[in-house]
Image: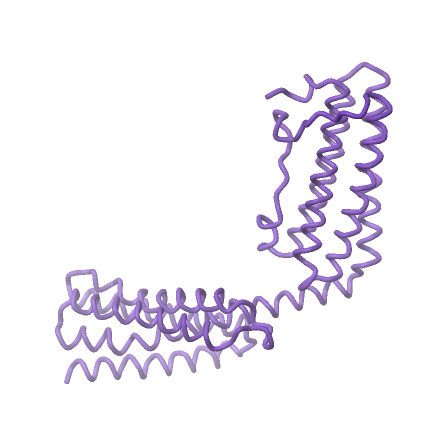
Length: 318
């Protein structure tokens, strides 16, 4: 693998062609991945992809004039120290803002690439060629900014962010909260009933583990089968089912793990403390994402959890 300083003018131009082609395809992927949920942002990336294709065609025309019809294959991964581009699947899960920042970083990296290459040569023709490429990327960045201003004014971006937050709540927070509540509350009765019936920590742990895993599997399937998400906008049922199932297991396992402590009374005290924290977390999520007043959320969760806990203790002690 060679460094940029070791490439000839012909190879640098070939690298520029392959880089522009790769960037154009990445922007097209961004546009395709965002078109359903962020249509205005998707139009920005479509414009950027078209601009990259124009750059590529201009570079190919220049290459043919200077070096002939054959363009050698020189890619970023063939050059030591070249910045590698992140693909759609690496940035899209982190949201539209991260995709926008990634696109801006791509343009800045391209400008630095051409400017650095120009600074490393004393040949006037090569310096002019690389300077023109840097100017083209700077112009592309300005064009992208104009396109974003036209297609994505502040109001539309704010609306996209609101819609994204709503989808996140529907697709992740709601099923996760349902699972956490079920796992944290519904397993309290069997775990503490087994604990107070046997006064054996490991027996309580076994019951809690079975109840948590069983509830997680049940809740996961129930959430996935209840709604395919097409009409409700709640997203893929597989994601919701996975989130709901895992959070159900997490809610139940939280106050089950303390019963790995051999001393029954110590384990029970620790488990009770964990239960309080679980219920407070549920109340916080309701306040943070569901706009439930914090006092009301805490009171309802504590009341429900306390009743289930008392039921388990009474049954286990009888």
